[in-house]
Length: 114
Image (tube, rainbow, N blue to C red):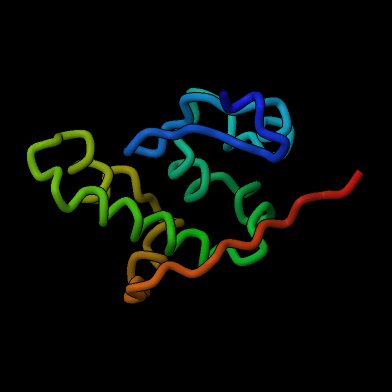
């Protein structure tokens, strides 16, 4: 189904692991390749900072979304590890300190035109 969409598309699970992505999405970013944890890529790969027009905002959205999903998953060890900071390396520390928005902002991406 993902391959039938005319725009970049991917499917991710609650942990933000990319499960499927079609060729257009995979060509846009290494973060959109199946098997990649999109959150880890966004927080730790320098290429992610170039990919998003506003990396700080994109990171805030990702982390707040994960925390929202994790709210009901207190007995899920993998989710707890993500939220409790085992995944959040140095790149995430400043994003975590500024998450206060109740309405997630829209994301703007820098996509090269060829």
